[in-house]
Length: 364
Image 1: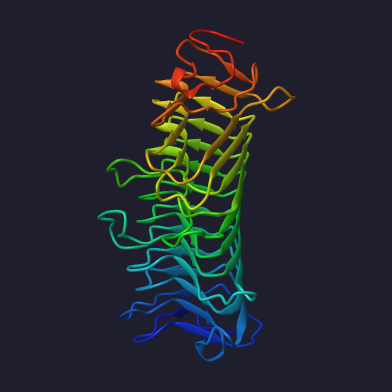
Image 2 (image 1 turned 135 degrees about the vertical axis):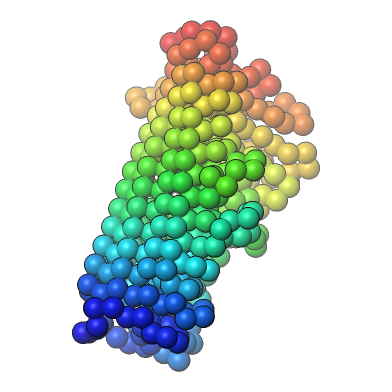
């Protein structure tokens, strides 16, 4: 589709696609500055989620300072969004995905874009806007993007969103770099997060925020492997619901590397299997495990193992390599000899009742 070099309508959204289409848009600039205007809207026919959706490819475009979403994808629509700059939304997220019907989700590949500085200034945990926001039955591949400076989250997925997040740089967002699951219990959303740089998130301050958070309502199985988490203001990862397979990540200079917490809000038992990770210079704990008083579900944690590649490595934590808080004795599965503790102070807090050797100083 041929478009002017610059699209800046005085009223309404800049571009809207409805129903079955196969459009390709490349090398244009959009400034959708009218009240509530969105840059590009990709929607089902008549904006009904039960109707066939549009299919659009966007590449090498600049969507700068739209009043609302830079790109909004709804219903049964599908999009390929690559090599774009989506920057400075005034009131909403850079990319939004909504209203996917069960069985026919909204789908997108979002690759090699800069998605930055979207949303109004953050004034707290429910303000601002995100880089990429997915709500209600979405399937998304998020690959190789630079996601930074957004005034709420870098990436948020909830209400049956299923994400593959691979090889992105997710840094300096106001709250969490990535957060999964919403306010409703037993959210089936899932994510596979691999090969990303997730650093310096939580710039808003307060009590701190996380590189990645799996909220308490999560009920699905998550995978996090081969990422770096550095300097996030609270935890590298927080897991409050569902299960997490965690392997070959590096956690440094976060307040805690990981917090795993069975709380009164947790929808399910909270499970963590942590193998082959490295924890360096986190000011509090490398891994912190907590069960809240009155929590309705179990906390089931395995840290390390004796097979090749399973040991976690701890060096220079401020409090403990592995710390715990529980209303009664908490038993973690830490196989004897299954972790490496490098420096004095990298120990296992006695209340953890971990069945590894207790290290009060240097150890193998």
